[in-house]
Length: 284
Image (cartoon, rainbow, N blue to C red):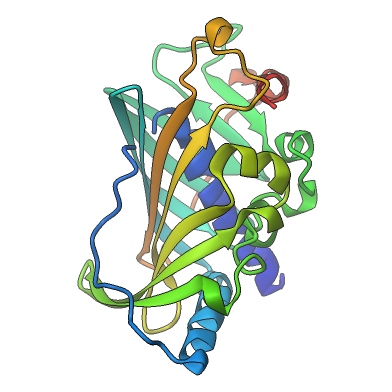
């Protein structure tokens, strides 16, 4: 059986899909209101909160599988666009299925063997209806370890990039009838892979909220950020906004659910990995 760390990497893959793949459909950065952060939390209490956050990915992965939803909103230049994704994920190997609805269109999405497949209605390439993106190659282009694609300790590095001063226990809330504790977390961007470039785009810290159930599992994760265009980008040429506010909310329910996903028939698949990586290089 694979280690907890490997299984937890699948959660990071879900985060990756929510914050990268879905961002193109993306929110207004508004976060949900909760109870105020606990005032005067003791040093021991802060340490316990940090340990709870650091252990959340492993404890969630112990459930093996879960249903998940990913909601993304992105706002730029007075316009807001949103997307909603529903599906299921296998924490053992990152296999997942998801249906994403955005701007009146429904996209079918699968991840099998760290390869993303997407089917967009009315969109074909070379007569093929499925688009394929090799997430490992994308990771290499971004300077990440392809063997750790989606690992929270690599692609997000949440567990390593926080200290006791970065976590606040913010009170109790119910999510779908389940009792949870919310933690407000400030992630040190400089300690993330590619931190120097990321810092230029999102600033020195990345605000994150986690809602953990009584078993220490993630029930909800929310990341709000303002993404700035790279310094090398030329707005007059690209026509792209220079700043986008993005809010990504991911939820897990129905732990232990069945997950079935297969790669589409090869004859129906067009590989667009190189195209995606070239676009990423132009934006870096």
